[in-house]
Image (cartoon, rainbow, N blue to C red; front, side, top):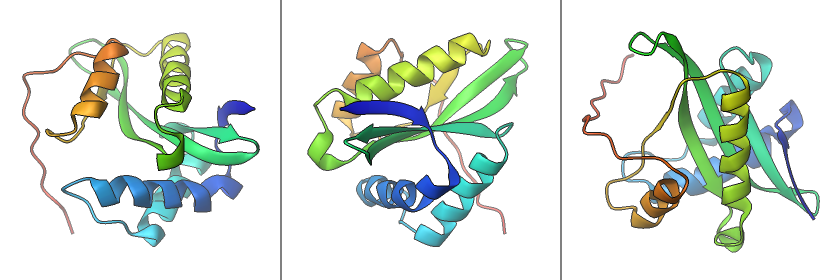
Length: 149
């Protein structure tokens, strides 16, 4: 039996573990359980920053999607940055990712957000196909980053 629900503080260790899996497969990031736990707790304790939804199967969290909130000056509306989405490897391709993204999309729609933006690795064709199937389109924008101390 599977359920999608809002994450709570007791979910932080498992969510940090899932982020470790995600960051291990991404090119630009290295897992840091302490940093990930700190960020997850910050979001859970401050829902104005974002929302984390977890997918449970038989009572165990096997996936998560993390949304961060900001404002688009172009749209004149609140918008969402889909910061992280991950499903445990054993549960990929079994519908949990679809349930999570559908839940996130419905939440954003109901809350009046105007857009969801996400990033994925350039060579992650499976993720790109998944997001395209869910109605996302590629942007012509280029991502730049600068780490601040």
